[in-house]
Image 1 (cartoon, rainbow, N blue to C red):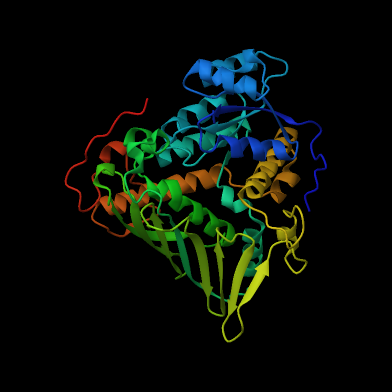
Image 2: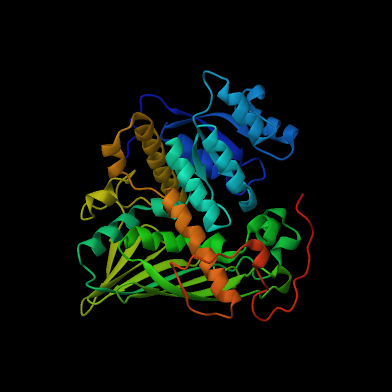
Length: 416
């Protein structure tokens, strides 16, 4: 159980790029990083408007001189300070991730980045190599993986409780963008702008979340080939999709599906993962994250509850309050940030034994997410064909064509 005991000799000195006053995601980064005392916020480049960023940073309690106009200025200035930052989180639009992560790694910083890590597999592999060369952690915020019942699912599958794995059914299909929400919301607008979002909207924005959960639960299951179709039901979003279906074949014969959507009208979140074996199935739904549904053929349904003593020790290790009390996304993110901190500390100390015991969404998970999106886009833009997952072909943003049913992309207002 996590109880607030300090696990590091001293908190990691931490900065942020993005995550300012109007950010949708900045606060949960800060809440998660600061919760257990493993990080101490020291600096930030919070906003494209330097004055707004400085004002916001000082209201967070930072010294004005450590609230910077740009990430480049922050990295250079902090490198000259004896108390300069050791780690940075990147909470900016997708199109900036590659450049900021690269600069941070070259500055000798550990990095936590929003997904997707970048636009292309080639870029992702470059960041992976740089992370290894610099001996610095590059983590990705697949925040739902911090829910403890994801660990319970992994352990049940590994123990053979489901039998031979046959089907993995995934979805993240909400309805909040079933109309053109981006018309009046800049925070949504950049997500449907190829220059800022990359070659995909919902595949990268939501589809990679359950995909990563499947990788945690089923680490031995590897994709052999996939087929994807994608649509722009709100036509002004073309060439980016707001709905997509992906079919996957795994090595060994199992199959999988991912439904990625922002137009599932009426759905609050709609992220579920169901793993089906020859003896039993399990299902986790992020709107009820404290329960894991286990269905054994011929037996009554079992609902496993977070925090209970019958769970595997690996699941209970992330517990914060015990059974019966609900935990949510802020606890899940805090669990991930704890793991990021422990990995950063172990990396700096060269503690390979500690690193081997830690599991978190690292640079390899980031590479996998980018590769999956790239292959989905390539399949869809060839008319929905099967593509081999180890095929070296790539899909560059400039190659992206409008999804099926859309004749011509319409422009939208620029994001300032």
